[in-house]
Image 1 (cartoon, rainbow, N blue to C red):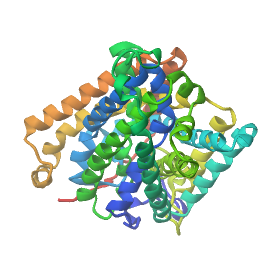
Image 2: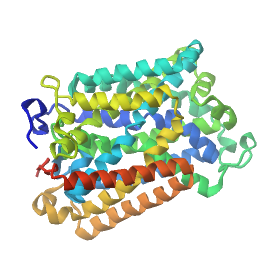
Image 3: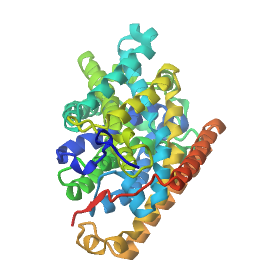
Length: 459
């Protein structure tokens, strides 16, 4: 298909401006968001006080799930992020399938905007009647921010990141001494058992919370912008995931051990706990810089990270080239940015439930991640010299064992996710997969697809 100069798409021309701390801010900002601020409340209802144990289990699931990204990013600069990873290690058609399924996943942007405004409304109750309009305005501001380019987005992200971590540490500082530890791990505190729905509920909550502890691999979408992805990506993925998991363990203990669970669940936010344990100045700091910036950083990085994989897919012809064109000054895929904005507006204005938006992306993610995990086992065969030099090099047998463990963990998550899904959500996932298969097949047969090399070997 001929391309005009206006429609030209080329990620190899993107300026590499992001260093390790920029990537750390993106990764931590992506992880800390809906998970502890919104989804933790839902998980409390699923498993009770054992929500802190569920977070630890979820973190273990997440680390297993990150193995493919760690190994692959230590060898390759994948300009299209997870799309490139899917093409290289699974197959060209699968890359198209993966990208199409991600269209629905981008509704999670609306989830973060809704959650952010939930906390603003808790802080200023007079805004409650205007919740949807405020959410619309907040989401619009973040989309406009991302129009000005990755470097500018990263500066704002870093600013929010430092204040966010300070606010969450402050929550633990004031909250942990007030946790009723003497009865926490028994079956008497607040008249509820430790695990309100048994071991199955514990693992179901853990599977649900992988959406909370996961997110560090989002930095793969910034491979075209990163200065040194081979060294920085594995480091950032590991450190951010483990660090946030430890922080979550403390936060979750406060969520389950200070107030009766029914009161926390009824509020839908951490606001009542924060108000009970903090002096007023700390409470306002937490609500703005903790709760607000947690969801703000996740919304910001979700918007930015959504673009590069789709741009790479446009380069290959899965979508018309004009969809992925980059703005000549900001190097931002402005057409895609507008499209994602338009897709998320109805989710905000129609008030779709936050927990449903989160579940819409879980099963689809499990399916694609399962195949990608198995595909990365081919790394030694595809890039033998670079893999031999990788600081994360392991024997072929160990690599197969680790990535096989990743695939098994993903299957277990998928099973647990399906158990807790309403039939309507399951059907949405199935319909999306069917649509992706049909679209991919038709686009491939049309001759419009021409897969280009979207990676560079780094070692």
